[in-house]
Length: 202
Image (cartoon, rainbow, N blue to C red; front, top):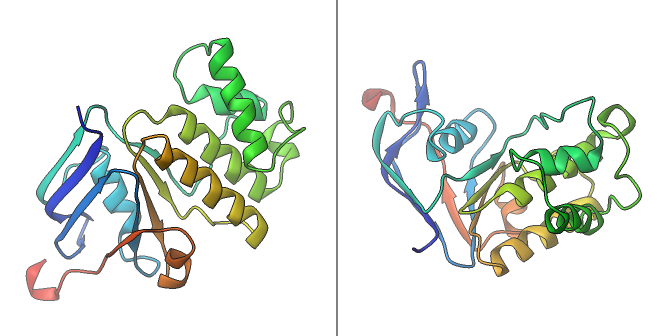
């Protein structure tokens, strides 16, 4: 079964806020950027694409499994180490191969030597990268990352770009939500602009 995420005439919204309809295809070895200013509804779009909330209108389909989402809030468990937080995303006890992959992800993201540190001992940027590593390890179908460069300097951001490129090269499509076309130019292959619905269409 082809790994994919597709949306047609999708309108996402919470309360009175609505996004303009959009079409999207996240598949193949490409990174798709959902680009728009803060508050436009990109996070709501990702929540809708992943099935966490129903669409206001339109159709979303994915396969063979639901997308994994890395939201802006890192959501790390404060009583677990960085390595344990990464493997926690699997939802079960990791095997040796998965633990090894989790360690490799931490190294890839510039977090070598920090396996045993708890979130309180990490910087905001380090916690962000642990959360991204957790999502990469858990993703089996499509990976959605909301603002991948949040709390990161250029060097750390470059590590994230490299890690996500490896994800798509391994066969897992990726979508990212970004504030600007400038950020999109650093990482994405295709851009979808997220806009607010016209007043008369809400």
